[in-house]
Image (tube, rainbow, N blue to C red; front, side, top):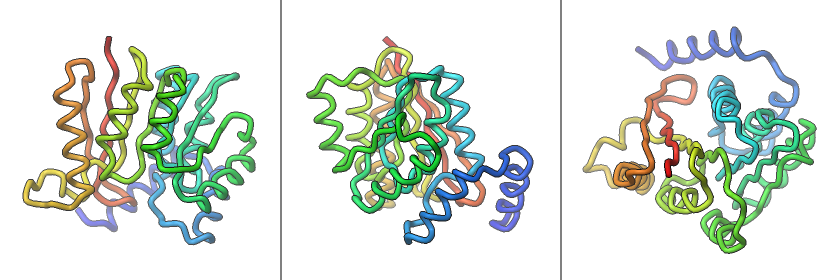
Length: 222
């Protein structure tokens, strides 16, 4: 299989199953124009996250890593009336662009973008005794994944779903000799999840327009 074939299948899936959407398309366009890295989830992956949040019945969502707000919009649209989403972003330019994209999508009253280092912000949220979230999406720097998971568990309840993106890293995660900090961060994330008897977890590989990668999915028990 080639990248060309992966892209062709993704194009087919997106054109067939994910209708064109002006707000989402505008978020991608503005992110590209602003020079943001093209590391947002693909449209079919955005719908995947949206459906997971709806299946879970999430009323409170936490997103770690905002970028331009593309996945933020997908997740916020999964919320019922009265639901809220908090998203964390360290880059002030990205955060401001995300706020504009979220507002353009009509979700400014639903989404709160918190600026700052995510680990520090999560620690502050724990100290503030923030109410638990129903669904948590982790998609920031992979080196800090263990810190994100540790904090996510403190901001969870029984039944919370935790999804972590980019856990395959073009296969580097399985190469124990690979000392790339991101691969190490993902491996440590898996080790922590595996060692926690109250966090059943699995992971799936994905191929497509975003290359060879994958998602980890967990549910908090007890």
